[in-house]
Length: 349
Image (cartoon, rainbow, N blue to C red):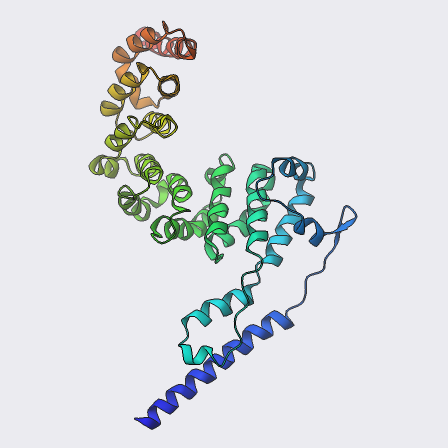
């Protein structure tokens, strides 16, 4: 037994030494990226001076166009330090007696830099479309939860980007979204993931069970966006899971910022109109202007399946036009659209 134990230790030490050597070789031998000049300064200087969530900075970098986007992409690639990341990951998995033989892993010194870069690229939206591949890799592989969260946000902040992604890139991103929405220990990215998953109807067999489980999440925003996503991705599954009923319940939340998002979700594709229409009519009568306005907008742009309920909706909108707040004006616009559609149907008959 002593002989077997010695052999096991020897193998583990050899493996560990080999892994350590490989990682150190990778970090030290891999060619160092050049630091080219950008507008008279080394790119590293631009990256070092970035601030998180700076609106003026976003405006500045937007003026640099694609050339600036490439500077940010190279900065993110340089900040990844894959060798250090791999060493940190495997060092945590080793037994204590083996770790004592090895150099201590370096701390993640570039996390703040990566957070700034990913946030800035996300804020540039469609102007940073060429960053899609690196953002997918970041969402999948970055060791910092906050960085992965921002990388997922890039795909939902850029209007329509997920709908426009090639199929292979959408599929490559999907594991990152599922990992985020299922990560109970790190709940921060789950809201972004729930929002993003509504763009995956072609993956409904994979996505629907994940969203059903997310309906039980402890975070209200996650439940809200999971219900909306499930309605869109798999309406039949959503009906069984009570997704529309969950949205209706959230419309009564005392926080009108949360409630208004649920009102908007009720008017989107996949929502059960037999439940959503009465709820939206009730929201039209709300004394809260934001809630009532959201109900008007939801009905104005409601999907085709709502049109069979025009006999209930037109009188409700007509009544809302009498309001003296912003709701009245918005309701008049929505009412005109509904009456036009109703008249067109009557003429067709």
